Length: 115
Length: 110
Image (cartoon, rainbow over all chains, first blue to last red; front, side):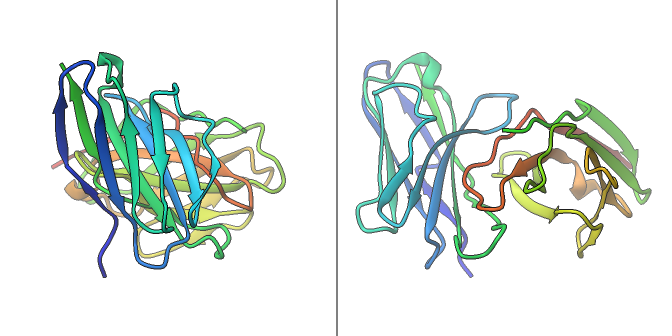
């Protein structure tokens, strides 16, 4: 079946521009996660949704970062007024919350480069 | 969150077994041990998980120490496609986000 997809795969933004990154989770997966991965580092948690509810946003680095999942399926991570330090790969993962412990299925990521 | 420590890198020869260690001395009784791997230019993928007993699946085996303060991921016959960064992660039984460390970069030599 179809896995987690993310678009665009690559995004180049000029400093100060706003960007929107899309995640299509596996159909029927209740939980959705966003992670940020800097070059050479492991992924770092940004935020977590259960259906349309954003239950944890403790990892968002600043108020320039905003995520939504209005219908409990597709999610969008928006970064306003991008800065060079926002350059990273942004990973989305989804899982079935009712299986314990649950496996997270990751998308290929969106590589954001801020120039 | 309990922390894990792994070697930065390891090398293996093709078709030989590989033992990837992970220390987690502050693990709590309800923490599961997960292993994920990340191939170049891809998102992480699930390898295996366990709680107390050793586990086997088609990809690998997970050996968990009796005191649960360490574990070892075993690839029985390394192939070139197994070259990746391997992450050892702990999570509570109710899941939520994973805390990734830098992982172990495995190189497989032909």
